[in-house]
Length: 360
Image (cartoon, rainbow, N blue to C red; front, side, top):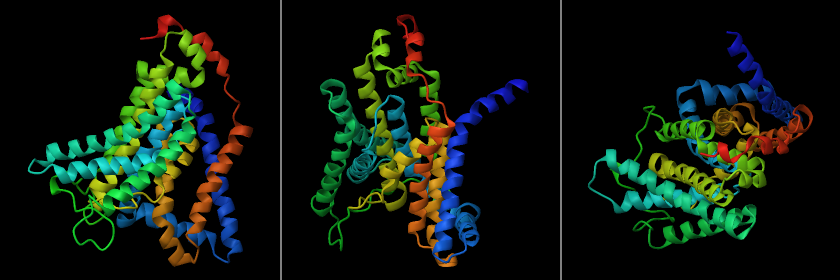
């Protein structure tokens, strides 16, 4: 019991900044509602009751959480290696494209085989889109923020071209592809709602990533490169290979987010695949402060905000834009809380822990 209590105390300092940030954002959001002439208590009650306590509202929250969770995990694993993956949005588009191609071109096989194949296609397409900036950073020294950001626009326009041309459904009134095969569609997990098995894919991915980061040589190498690449190289770790692998994994996770949107929600490839999940994922990853569990909980929080926003507007007269303001304020207060509540880590300490004997 004493050991468990000590572990809880050890975790508490890392949880304090995001908790303070969320509470501060909600408080400032309440102030904005008062200025707009709305009742913040009624607004927040409507928002969270609809998104978390009602059957259909919770199903909608889980639907939005699946892509947010997967893309945030992609941003998180890149951050652990000291890389900033700003390309989650483009990787979502490429993952959606890969799963759509697999869902449209492969027919006549059982869902037990088709669903994993389509998910794998989404993972590979997103992984390639993450591998490109990883290679450019590791081998050519090109800043990954620039390359991942620019690759977003290439992905947007590539998908737009395909759904307006080669992949466009016959006689479609707007740009979208035909419906993917039934055997490639993810099952609904809450009957009568939109919640599909994509959230299960996200939770499994979170568990696997936690094991990789905390209990494997890959996680050790990733952390070493992120804390001090010079010391990591001295310890026998291939910094270039680690960066490439991490960025490919980050892209693959975001690609799964796009695949879940196509396979579980829309069942076809649209010109507008994502409403900005890739950019929200950046905020979620920073808010989670490197914790996989934190990403899961923060993704749920952001999903609840998105899910209950319209109900909040109808019942309390609060504009939906208040929700986006709360998200932005949360990130702002995270930055402030890290400055005032958390002592900066000593990056030099990794020199003492990285040695050739530790590499496996």
